[in-house]
Picture 1 (cartoon, rainbow, N blue to C red):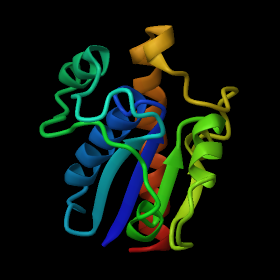
Picture 2 (cartoon, helix red, strand yellow):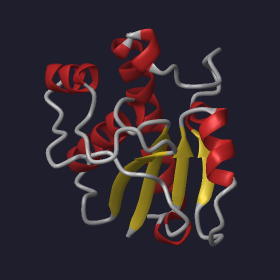
Picture 3 (tube, one colour):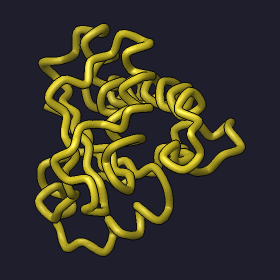
Picture 4 (tube, rainbow, N blue to C red):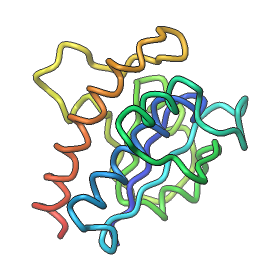
Length: 154
């Protein structure tokens, strides 16, 4: 089983959106018995809360489930549990790197999956309000990630 973890600041906007989108794409490709996905945040403000209203709205618009998703904090054990830890921006990546942990996980930045994009970080819609832009980036990046996993690991 390949395990993927998405990380953002509060785990209510970007990373749960990525978790839900990737999970949906995994199901569409019938890979749910081969790839698992989760999300976490580097800040503890929203632990236990459901995804942000804007994230829920855009996922509902595309018919993507976020059932049973609640915010949690990234932790040291995640380095041993996941094959990929994918951070939405540099600040999150720096915070993840500060955690003690194993070396199983490959740490990536989400926008490295989309090198043709000018943006080098996934904008935080908690502050920008642009959930559609974030959804478009995440959907495209998740396709690239799935192709990469399929060619390298499956």
